[in-house]
Image 1 (spheres, rainbow, N blue to C red):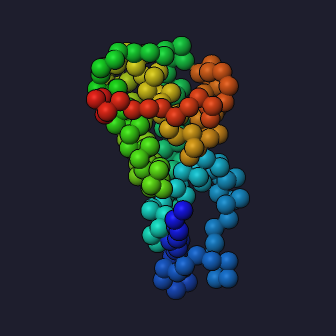
Image 2 (cartoon, rainbow, N blue to C red; image 1 turned 90 degrees about the vertical axis):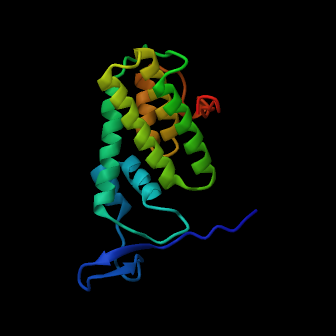
Length: 188
């Protein structure tokens, strides 16, 4: 119903020191196959969506790819610290409020194609869960619920990692069939 024009991806040309439009004709593209082999498909997906607003010009960065990989490693480590049997927790905690604000932000950002800010919100949510674990301020059930919500929200962006952990948590069926979480405006 509406036209959407995507921005250009640019890259620094080491020979000239100039930032140029990335294109096959210039021979300055980055092979996704090499990146996938090195970092995994989920990392490439996260970075591609995190690089910036899709309608704007963005510069390719190897450091950004590594940053996306580190984020997914933190999610992986976080999931490994959660009791898979823990599901429900208190109904009014700081972490639950962060969870509902994150659901709201990611839902709105994704509907506007602003995946870069959706990924940023997920990074903040992952950090909030990790901080809650470190502080010991939440029950295992609250942590388990928050991590499952993180997996649901991250799933369209990083499906392989999230499906793997969904299965490890003993959940039945595919994560895509689990449904998108809803936020409570009073908690958000």
